[in-house]
Structure formats: structure tokens, C-alpha cells
Length: 62
Image (cartoon, rainbow, N blue to C red; front, side, top):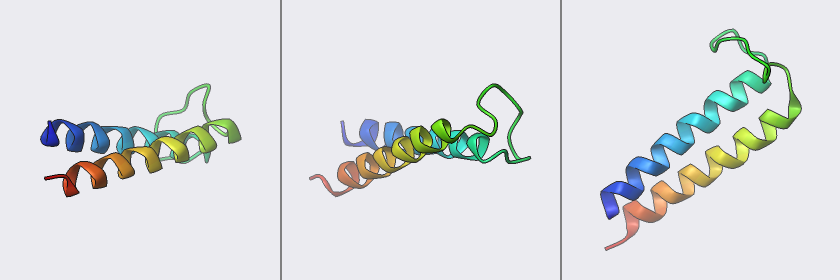
């Protein structure tokens, strides 16, 4: 279960990073309905932090 938690955490963090970039209207990600919306910056940041926390917690478990 440790590896599954690490993988899920990394995937969540990456998804959160994409959402933040879309909310910031970055040219690195495709344009969509999420582009330039502060809502997606907040949701993405929360998802990124949650994914990082899950990864760290799973990594430190024994």
C-alpha cells in the first residue's frame, strides 16, 4: 500500500500543478474553460498540497 500512496500522491500533485497553471493562464498548458479563473488556482493549490502531503506521509510510513 505504501507504493500506491506514493503514486497516487504524485499524480494528485501533478494534476494540481496543471490546474494552477491553467488558472494562471499559462502558455504551458492547453486553453480551456479553466483558463484565467482564480477558482482553479485555489482548487489546484489545494490538490497539489494534498498530493504532496500524501506522498510524504506514504514515503515515511513503515
